[in-house]
Image (cartoon, rainbow, N blue to C red; front, side, top):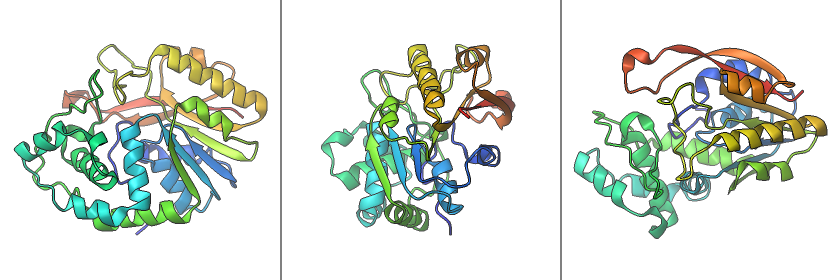
Length: 272
């Protein structure tokens, strides 16, 4: 079994991998990803043996905490996961806990459990930074897939992977002309009701989007190869005017109204 994402994540890129791979260099000395999420692109590049080293980061500390626990302490994480139950009351009890007061493996197991049992696999926090997604009511969620977790852990331990928590702009310190960076930020909303950016209590504003665009133009000036995903809207096209923009078809999976889920277009932006 090849390693693959062990977390559900809003905007995950599994379905777009065939399109993304078309824009990936043949040989990558250092792969960088500053919006890690579920890591679908990272795992695909490892499976294709395209990278020699990886720098994975995200500003979401709970997410990074989970990734590092899976990398370093997977057996302990699995022990903790086996204590969980697919029960509504148990879910809300776990949700109410403060992960910062837990042991490393306990906090990671809590997030993995909540991720697979919450509504739609969403990660969302309120202004106080507390996870607030309701119970998902799944009949038999597999929140302790040992083979999946062990394979992911082995991949992270054996492929020269560094994982850390930081703002996306910090990745500029790690890139080189021989590196490749994939950037998958919270998308610019297509409407006021389509804003799913509450991965951290501060959200991801237009100023953040503008700073990200400025980073992409600095990469271009330095000859750094970077590929970015974002929504297909006028704001995105204006921000990245001057870079190579490609339109791809995707499937919208997150909407409270199931009838409004369906095919849409997204953009891939390339610095070279």
